[in-house]
Image: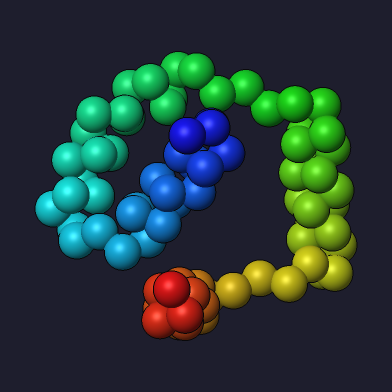
Length: 78
């Protein structure tokens, strides 16, 4: 199985796993995630652009409840 397929399976598993398993997975990878990620030039440019739009009142923001609703909708589709 190639890395793309593995990533897709992991993403799917995380989307449907119960909370105990998510907590366990997070605990295993937490320190690695905090130390190893760096943003690419493109990612940084996108983040700066979004921040600028937000600060100028042009960006769309979502409440916690709206975010949870979006997540629930995505989970129901899976």
